[in-house]
Structures are given as structure tokens and as C-alpha cells.
Length: 225
Length: 225
DNA sequence: AGCTGTGAACATATTCACAGCC
DNA sequence: GGCTGTGAATATGTTCACAGCT
Image (cartoon, rainbow over all chains, first blue to last red; front, side):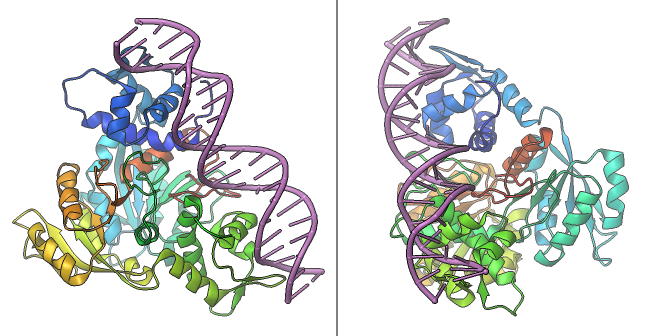
């Protein structure tokens, strides 16, 4: 299928990738049924999703693991590493600075910034905490195009303005605010309280939800979107 | 509109709540246009969403703030506090233990657990880290029905099994694994690497995404679902 | 006049069912 | 026989447009 991968599919591709990476080293091929079972979606969903890629499946056999992994990484744009900065070093910011999972996923933290003079010069992970004013030159020098925003709600919009001003065009926002950004900047919001509240809703009733946060539905068990 | 609030609406209700809480103290009424502007959705979306609640709007005027807030909290089931436990005390687990945003959102952390004997007895926030084996009795004593799972990918399924075994029926999963849980347990997954990968996809192109992670689309600017 | 509430139109996403290939 | 790829059917979600209340 040519062109325009649906949002819902894009949100599932990282999950497939995660599943593929966890596979025992034995196999070199996987069927849509097997992948669906691990990713907790329907086999037809897997096939439809993968049909949007330059497709790799072999009828009667399945999908070649290496090809599939390579293709998904390429589509997601993580066939090269992205340089990422973290803005805001509270609890969450420093936890993210130390988070091991980013490296294997295609991301490298190259700078950590805060507005608070008391924090500047301290270390989070192996990185010096720098003033926000240092962001602009670092972005130019290091080719940063992705920022993780982990300030408090208050400072978030101001920090986002600066992030946009220096030319970063994608923001992963952990602050509990809806940001105002220019047209060309992509924002994705992750809100911990929101997630719990959604779960709370489904806990009251016995409803039929699903597991993946971005999208995705769950076949057999109660996973919440 | 009676019955069955759509998943997409449920995912937006916490955002509306967040927007309402941020409003300056002056007003006592808000229109769908005003709320839509803040929440970055279309006014018709706000009206449709709110029409699933025991509706509170007044034609020609708008929605009464107190009523609306109360109704949303009630629908989400956060008109009372939920007792929450955190299982797994790595970087992320301890950041979550210290996260201020849960309290106002209707959640109270009542226990923190880890498998690693070296961590047990240490403190995270004001809480003693306890062995997982203490979970069962705490759940009974404290009426816990929600768990945040923040272990590494390895330990996650095992921890989830224990969480389910002791009777918790909702899990917010930060571990990068799709969990296997019984039918009656609701799981919501938040995966930091996945979020970045989705952003990465939209960074390559100039696409039209949206901001809320669970759902929701964005009117004017590029926010990614 | 202004804003809500909602049916109807449209758009997106999921699932089915089966033809096509290995 | 087994598994992919996909059109068609269904389900879910969004937006429009306007009637109805205040």
C-alpha cells in the first residue's frame, strides 16, 4: 500500500519493534499470528499495519526478522541516532536523563538544561546541567531536533517557546499543560496523572480497554487505550 | 446522551479537567469555544464529549465551572482518592514516588516495593521500600486497586503476575513490555522510547499529528497522537 | 444574540473473509 | 497447508450545520 501510513499504525510500529527485539535469538522469521500474539493485537491488524511498509512478508512463511526490523526502524526514522535534549531537571527530568531505554531505541541525550541557577553546574547522569541560554548554540553544534520537556506546569510554556525559537521541531512534553507552539512543531504529551485517571475510569466499571497508550486495542485481556 | 462514554472521550476528560484547574480564579462559567481553545481541540468536540456526561451546559451561556469539574471528576472516578502502589524502584520508580502531580489528581501513593534486597529498607520519598512479599497484606489493609509498574523489562511480567495475584485490577505499566494479564485486569502502557519514536516519525516528514497521548487531535498546530 | 446539544455526513480504524502465492 | 495481502464490511471517532433554549 503506497503512501500515508495511518497514525494508528505509526503508534503501533514501535511496539512491534519492541516485540521483535525481545524475541529469542533462534528464529529468523515470524508470522503475523506470532507477532500479534506477542504484541497483543489481532493478526489481521499486524498484516494491515505491515502492508503499509515496503512489504517484506513471504506467503506461507512469514516476515523475515532482519528485514522487518530494518524496515520499521527506517520508516520510524531511527536508522540513525537522534540527538535529544532534556529541558527541566526535576525528579522526572533526572530520571529521564538516566533512563537506559533511550539508547537502544535510537536516541542519545546530548544536553540537559534548567532555568534554576542553583541546579546549573550540577550533574544529572554524566551530563552537566546547563542554563537554558546554552541551548541555542548546542542545538546548532550538535544538530538537535528533539526535546524532552520535563519542567513544572508553570515554566513549561516559556521553556517550549525557547525550544521552538532555537529551531527544535519536536517536543515530548511531560509537563501537565497543553503547549502552544507554531504550526511546524510537533508535540506529543505524556501526562502521568492523566494516565492514572483514565485507568481510574475503567477500574470503576468492567470495561473493554486496551494497552498501548498512543493507540491500539487489545485482543483478549483488558488493556486500556 | 445515555451510556457508554467512548474511549476517545474518556482520554480527553482528564485534559479538560487539567484545563479547568488552570483557569484564572475569576470566571465561573466557560464556553465550549473557550475550553476548546485551551485544550487545543475543536469546539464541537468539546460539546460532543461533554454531552456524554450528565450534562451541565446552559445554552447561550456555557458550562458552570464547579458543576463541570465535579461531574468530570465523578465520571473518572476520582471524586474519592485512590490508593496507589509503585512496584519497582529504579530511576523512574523513585521519580514517580516523588512526583507531585498525583496528589491533586486524585491519587495517593501508599506503598513502594522492589525485589532487590539491597533496596529494601531504603527510602523513596517519605516511603520505606518494602519487599514485594509485603504487597499482599498492604493491598488488603489499605484498599489498593491501582499499581504503577516501573521495573525493568525483565522483571515486569513477574511483577505483574504478583500484582494481579494479590487482587489489584489496574496497572499503569512503564516497563517496555506488553504484559500478559487476566481478563479482568486493565493495563495502560506508557513507553518513553515508543513516544520518542512516534515523534521521530513525524519529525521526518511534515505531518499532521496531535498532542494528547491517549487520543485527541489537534486543531491548529502540529501535535502528535 | 449567543451558545449548547445533536443528528447526519464524513473520516479514520479495525476486523473479516478470502484470493493468491509459496 | 500455511500464511500474506487486501478489498469489503463494520465499528469508532470527528466535524458540520442547525434546531432549540435562555
